[in-house]
Image (cartoon, rainbow, N blue to C red):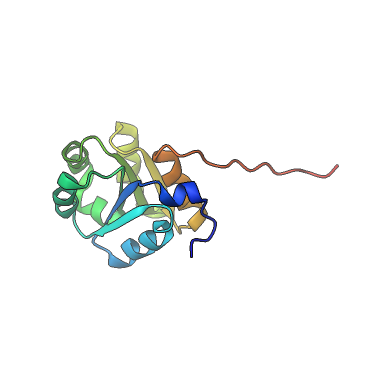
Length: 142
């Protein structure tokens, strides 16, 4: 059952590669996205590139462990190998120095800080994949 997912979103085929050596982070992100996306868990950037030859992703989600392994210098190469794919970085709040540098350099497209929520992950992934996102407006009583 897909909770909170519109039928148009459920049948649209957007592919997301979730890459991190931390299998828990991969599993959590895959769980948060599997209702709306074709989400694939991969342990290494090399596995993502190999799979991306035949199954080009719409978005590459890189976890903090993989970001630490790749470093800032490795991001342009993986982005190029996957045809200029958009990159979302997921890190802990205290470990975002490399992630922020990647954003500033234009190598990464967005950053999510842990702890993650389903809403924040889906909203960010929707935006990066070109889906319209719902805006909420808080009304104040006078």
